[in-house]
Length: 633
Ligand SMILES: *[C@@H]1O[C@H](CO)[C@@H](O)[C@H](O)[C@H]1NC(C)=O
Ligand SMILES: *[C@@H]1O[C@H](CO)[C@@H](O)[C@H](O)[C@H]1NC(C)=O
Ligand SMILES: *[C@@H]1O[C@H](CO)[C@@H](O)[C@H](O)[C@H]1NC(C)=O
Ligand SMILES: *[C@@H]1O[C@H](CO)[C@@H](O)[C@H](O)[C@H]1NC(C)=O
Ligand SMILES: *[C@@H]1O[C@H](CO)[C@@H](O)[C@H](O)[C@H]1NC(C)=O
Ligand SMILES: *[C@@H]1O[C@H](CO)[C@@H](O)[C@H](O)[C@H]1NC(C)=O
Image (tube, rainbow, N blue to C red; front, top):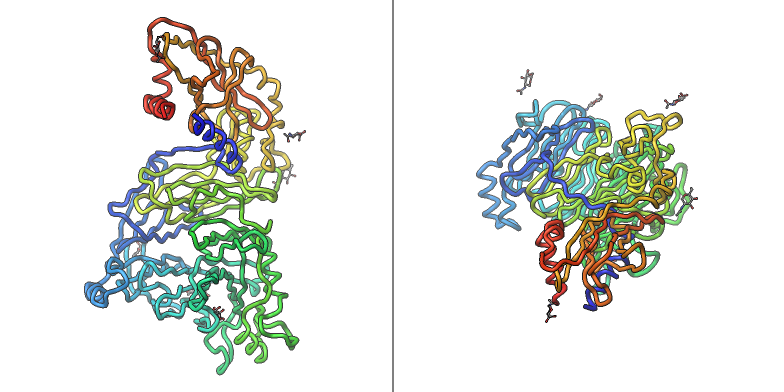
């Protein structure tokens, strides 16, 4: 008995951090792999309906429509000799002796595809979406082993910018790890080995600038100190940056290396406490067009595998790289500051400074000095983000977090807080989300697990219900209430914020804009009649829609007031000691945003014999059983 009450108390305590709504989606826009794909690379061009997925010895070209998914499969096997050699070498894992496609990227109009090729990486060009051919033509290309790792468990990152491809390779075994320009018309460059300490790459992003020569690429990674003592944290999260104009140094100084490489330490944890998350797993950047303003979201884990998200201001990072002291260098700079983006070559003195002191002293700290306040029981495996122009002419960040259980959380990040709009359960098999791609232009999210690829609309406004209050309380920046049509609709493209009339309220859960307060107080449901057989216990179910509302039962217009005996997808009222579930009208009330709304009501009547068939069928036999089982404990 006692622990039942504990459960319902707990449920109310964590409510603020939980998703407000939970959706189960089983719609046809999905693709099933015929065999599990445990490593997924993805390429998606904004505005298209196509998704390129790289798997084991296979490229899947998927075309999504509202009716389903059309797929074209392009085999990309490695040659048998490579597989034999790989297996003979007793590779770290024999299962990795195949051609795992790790890179699919478009550089100018060339589709570059690279794979592990059973330990000896290879690259191809994808022609006409159907054929793999050898890479030829314009520009330089580095060795395939600088673009794709030899085994899929070694993480690599590739990002195209201005007709060049930039690749970062994580360190593994004897390989130092590197950041390189690997393809394109510009000079191929690399990092010096001493600049990176066993890096494990987590992401990369182009930081645009209105002045083209100031364009930068940020690389996100963790460094691992192999000689750290047992009581020391071996990981350090880092941002490394290079300028896209970089053409290398002079013949005897940084000839084939970056002259603009700098790195900084980034922290994720509460203030200066010991509770730091140092292992950066993945990172995404949102920038407003050609402005430095923007935000970077990093997915971090600690030694126990707990995951958190920290947000950083791009302005702060930019400021640190352009003003901080360099570690181990205290002399004044001669002329321009070393490592800055510039078309003219840096002077020799500056090259020397960068060669030996690429690390800045300033440490990058998250906005709000702590990780985002997200549910702690969800292990996050992948994240993407979007920036949305709301009807108040402000931009809002939305994060999509894929979890270990194959769910996706949609999170609104305002300047003050995070609000978990909803949780989607998308898959038949609950495997972890391995990869995601977002298309802000067309409004789609692609989510991949080892078994399936699914597509979701970003503006999923139809799910929020058909009242203004439900639409506003969703706090979904993609959706607004259309007063004239009385519907919750997606903000149309090209919506004019000065003349438009859609209603939204994103900063707080507050639906007073709807002006429905009076109507809500009046609203009553018509009670469903239930005949209670003599001498039996019955349970009344109330469907939970918003997990941010508090649900309670009231008897005979509030003479008595009862908590849920059991909550989850239903707030269940059952026979507790002082709850005589015999006769009367029982109403389930949900309170959210200061308003109490009646959800459902029952009129119980004493009967002599019958079992409550109506209630049993509504509740579903399994839930009834579950409740009864709990009750009997
Ligand atoms: C690609 O398609 C074009 C036009 O259909 C055709 O001319 C060309 O030969 C194709 N290329 C290859 C390599 O098949
Ligand atoms: C990409 O296109 C630009 C201009 O369109 C050109 O200058 C450059 O050489 C191209 N790069 C490659 C690798 O083809
Ligand atoms: C790694 O840790 C050891 C032990 O604390 C320390 O002496 C060494 O300087 C560290 N290496 C780097 C590159 O920070
Ligand atoms: C919005 O409408 C106003 C008034 O019609 C007009 O002056 C303004 O240019 C429009 N804004 C945009 C972005 O179209
Ligand atoms: C909701 O907003 C209205 C008007 O902006 C304000 O008067 C009211 O206090 C707010 N309610 C809550 C619960 O914050
Ligand atoms: C039903 O009533 C009888 C007699 O009053 C009692 O012995 C029995 O325990 C009751 N059963 C239940 C399930 O309450």
